[in-house]
Length: 83
Image (cartoon, rainbow, N blue to C red):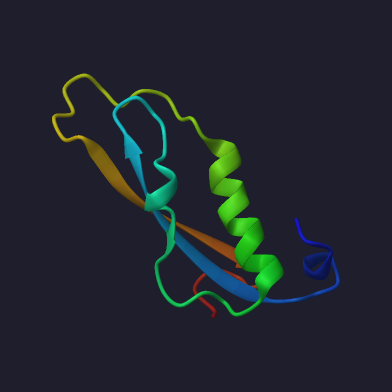
């Protein structure tokens, strides 16, 4: 968590990415869903959180696509739904 967040900085960062059937995230799939928050520390922390969470478990064997698209929203000092 960036120090600026503990100091009260607010922002919302939405990251979109693919998880491949083997649970890995291709580096080129990590992108901001909307323009970045404009707050470098928050943007970098959100990207790093997704990167550090990988690899995920394998997708179910019955899943027939090469990957699944996901979006993850990070709320920094903002209650979800009140941005």
